[in-house]
Length: 447
Image 1 (cartoon, rainbow, N blue to C red):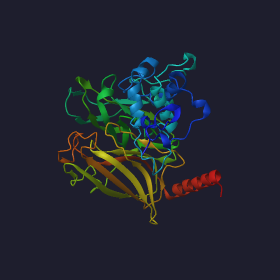
Image 2 (image 1 turned 30 degrees about the vertical axis):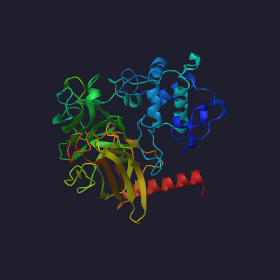
Image 3 (image 1 turned 90 degrees about the vertical axis):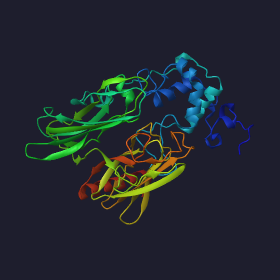
Image 4 (image 1 turned 90 degrees about the horizontal axis):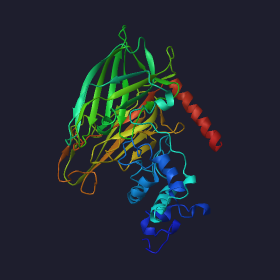
């Protein structure tokens, strides 16, 4: 039990700073009262500005001192609770090294809390860092890395009614005339139209089924989107094959706002490798994983949550080929609490790969493993998926804990599956990558 008189860094009472006794002490130079310009703005620009800008999905911009000061008490509460920035991984188990980790360190949380407790001073304007370079909502985020897309496809129009239940839009469009030979995809991105479509498209998929004149077929996404997830860029030397003719299945989940969005059309952008290029590794992009009889998977008929209940289910998938997994994206609805991905290797060894313990359906985050720790799994590995739902009043996202909940596509119903970015490998590719990783670990840690 903390004593109310205990003082944390910056002289803040311990009771104002969650877990403050567990946070390492700051350096002497950082123990002066923090200011917006010197201490807080660098954190907001790095971790928060991509959403909290005038054209972003955040409810308020936080680029200017006046805006940040207005919202300072709420910012302090949200970062102490680790609700913002959204990052729902369990930090006590599984892989912890991710390319897109936007979570705050203990020191960054302490700095923000101290700034608010100290009256949220502005500081010397000369210390303010340059504003970050941000893409607006009508631009492709992937374009900052790869330039303009090679082609863009558009969904049929759909009117999202105001203040209604979430709405599911499924339609097909033809895919013709955009490429004249088989090509390999380098990256994809899906988004709602700007400015209102990006506010109502909660998550969605544009799945291409294509073929050539010889009857060869290929299937894969030309866009998968979720709030908190933008485009998918394959690793250099990895690509997804598509053919010149086919159809696109649009599977779009809209969450209405307080105004009608008429004739909304989502767009998917595709970046291609140069003509004639054949990557060493071929992928089918981010893939749906749910066992037929669990873990409350999309097709599971046994997903029933009684009122005031907590329930877990497990399911397994066995890899028929070696595989490299580069990202992990859980998917449940409002009663979802946790989901984990565990590997059971052919020799019986078990390893927790990733676990989300604070799942929030409002966000659809794809957790991208760092290159040197991305799961590299042999043939025969069993992927064990465990999902937990909380249908009690203790779940702040639960709309009504008194209800029976079954499988369904509405947010108030439930489902459970996950999306994995998987590149299946030949035996030779697996052995080579495994040997390269062992050499890298030896070089880092010594023999």
